[in-house]
Image 1 (tube, rainbow, N blue to C red):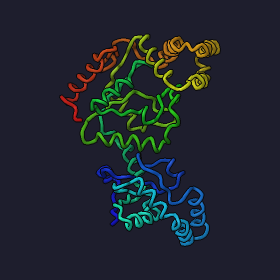
Image 2: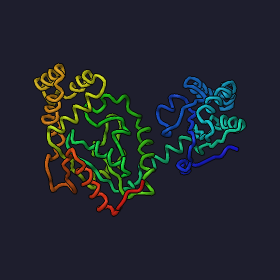
Image 3: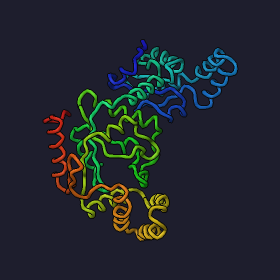
Image 4: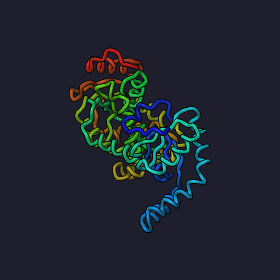
Length: 351
């Protein structure tokens, strides 16, 4: 028997395979994180059915949909069976209508355990919009600091040890700078970014009163941080991370030269800085890239461009709740952990 579930019940599903039966175009615009796309209608078929629905009648559109879908159902069943194995599946379409219902009936008849999302992706999307329209439910601890101070590295270590970290750069697939896209591929859509962020946040709701974030501009590449989250970042606890120029340069060189042939992308990104650094500065940086002088390039770009742009101190400052020198030992990480445990009375972090 097909079981209908609400958006709120999604998180209670364990070892369940999510199947989005909408068209490829709809799927790429945004879906439930982790879902597979097995479309009942492809982009052209969906467009044709939609045209008949509006220009002729819903009945004729349904008849065409039935005609197209009927020949596909055995193949779709096989696809789902391979993906699911012995696990239950949760199907959804746009509004929880005929697309998910028709495939759900077939899968149920074939002996699969099937859930269907009530209200479909539209209901899921509504829940996300509603969530971010409200006040953010966490106190936010923000790591700030100039480029190359290793903020992302610290957050990764904290997350590995069970602290509630939200990796905005990872979720947006962008480092939040003019070079932020290099080596990372395309970004998610705004809808998908919000879905990923919502999923990450949901995992902490019942266990923590705070989350850790790296300071970002409201826009990260092409996506925008929801206003509720961004406001909480401005009002939260501020931790400054600083380090010596040499260690910062070393981190940047390692990060970018570990990627496959970054030079071309770096050159294109530099063109966007032409107004700020001037023709002479641009020519000097391009010459360093030609010579593969990545250390010299990094030193110039952080000391003459990024540091003046962001303006964070490179030393202790009373303007922050905590200041940490990111030295090579574990001292910096331990100092932050001690601060968090004391400030939020955690003692130990649940795994």
